[in-house]
Length: 70
Image (cartoon, rainbow, N blue to C red; front, side, top):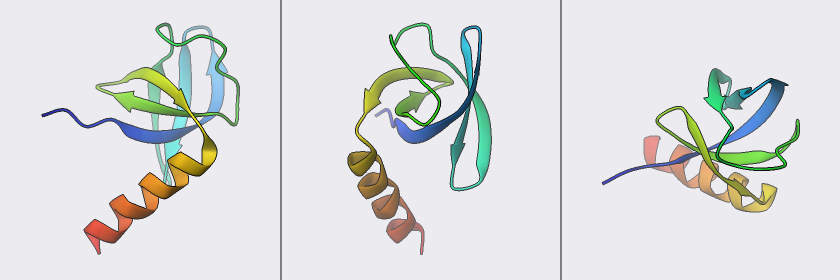
């Protein structure tokens, strides 16, 4: 089973995006998804962006993840 996490794009440099999920920052390779901009939400799996998603969907999923961890 695989899990992709919604993250917000903070910075982009070449093919890497610095992303944030609830204060945790990582780098994500964005070569597989086109037209990513700062402020977008993406699904990240194993360090790679696999899909661009709507902000509302990302926030809903992040809220569910937080609810499960509480």
